[in-house]
Length: 286
Image 1 (cartoon, helix red, strand yellow):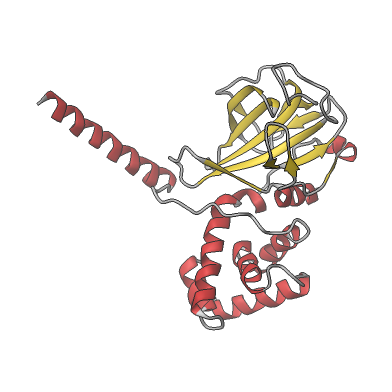
Image 2 (image 1 turned 60 degrees about the horizontal axis):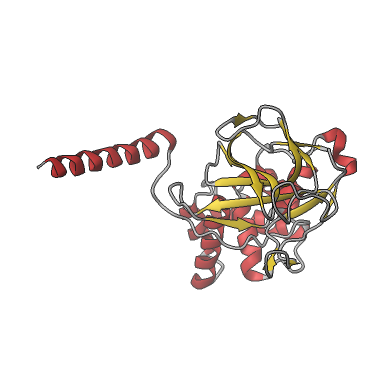
């Protein structure tokens, strides 16, 4: 009897938690596919600009190009063309998934529209911060000291053959690093590959985590469980990692910046996505 009561109370608690998250924060139990983020860095700022201009979600414009051309020969002119056409097909309606799907079905085959909507759903979930007021991970006064390129997927050999899951931003050792947004420090400490590192969970989009690796040191007062503010200095560029705790000097000082996404808010597993396009968009915001 006691066991039955405990199970019953547990079910009530779980049900209440589900109601609370959904009703209070508009969060549901649904999951979203985490797919490879294919939007090219050079095009990402243009999608953001075009979406703002036409008051459309950028994910639909990107998904059309990804399905139809794999982003080949895409430029501002082609984006404008697709945006104007979509606005016309919506005929004054909001760009909700249901309305957009109906609009696209007027001009594209059903299998292609299905694929477009799947891509749009994934990108809306995993790349939610792309168009928002997030920050480049370096202060404006230090930007000229930073260089980076798209190193996603490049081969790595330390610790076994693997692919690079982030973007390396080269900067002098000791250059301050800032939090791109408000968040919570969920990991701090030594990692054999990443050296001194931080993992910060996004407050607004809690399915998203930001990884800062190879630090020389942390900012004072940064500990696991702490809340950090957008623009707050959280650490400093270094060359730590690739060995036991304290190892340095194995490579040129830089920040390894990564983005990890959970398919649902209650999912333990996180998938890495390419942060390069995010960095290009945030970097373009002067």
